[in-house]
View 1 (cartoon, helix red, strand yellow):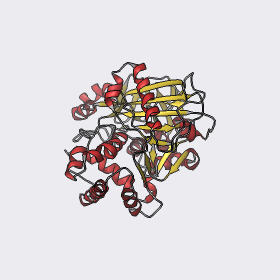
View 2: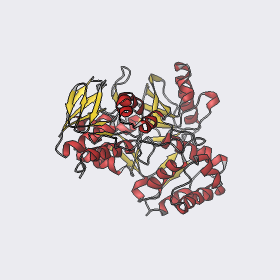
View 3: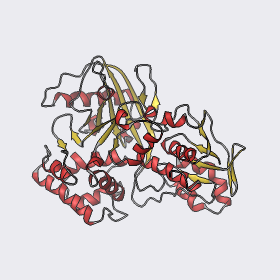
Length: 441
């Protein structure tokens, strides 16, 4: 089979690996020049080592991603820092740590031992988990996360301190509008499965080096190549006037809709076209900071307390130097999900407010952290269409299309997950199976 993959993000590259393993000759079209899509390496003059266009976190439940890394010769144990679930705020007000006990006992002990939560809130958290089990982890399809939390009597303080940050991290959508079903799926897979499923996996290298680079070396890559013409048929598919036996379209849904507008209309598949156009999107902002000297955080990943009125909208802080194993450097990444306020704000003011948020909350830590060194370089990335808005009732397309020669891939397809890396990988693998049932065996 002569196969094409359009888009070298995590979904497209996962599809290319599976198709190549099944015997296909694979060509990947990528408009950019670096594999990884919205989770890729970028370079900046103020930083010696590569940055990522967005800081990402994996979990022990990302079984398909971890398996795929091994399939392309990358060792997750060497490239990811695995830590048992540990959430701690930079200001020291909150801490939750899961011991290495059998599941689900480890989560019960973690919740009951959480610092910064009242006993009423600890018990309410356990009731929520028990209530979700009773629902078979399937709340009503039209519920928001906020409705789910109120139904299970979660206090405003508990929502603000725990559930809102977790919902934003997992769904990039605020609790008031986020899908309860997708949130429940994330909680089920990460907190209610095997003990190791709740582990946090923090990349120790840039995201392209994690596995996309290795996957790209196994296929024919056409960087700087934008697909402008796509003509699917029963017996093949024409891409920019070049014939292929089959193709995976692994691009954002709006771009897929533009490419497939005429073919879908001709096939009478306007429902799929409508679904591709129905997505709304939310931004994620990542502020990378290079400090004038070393500065080590108590944890490689810490929670930040938000004060939107002051521009303190970061939710998570990553110690990139600690993750890279560099004790002589000071390098941080501040992440703000659903960062609509930052996208509309003066860039320099936004950077200064986030730096102030980190410095102020670090100064409040009970361990008396040394003052944060001066910032030597700062780079703010704002992915304006980072993920789809994970709202209730959203109809997400399947991988299949009206043509047996064309499959769709992306975290936005009907994976059962929100717009996360594991969803992208699973979608790519499933798209390959649509074209060749032997792919992925």
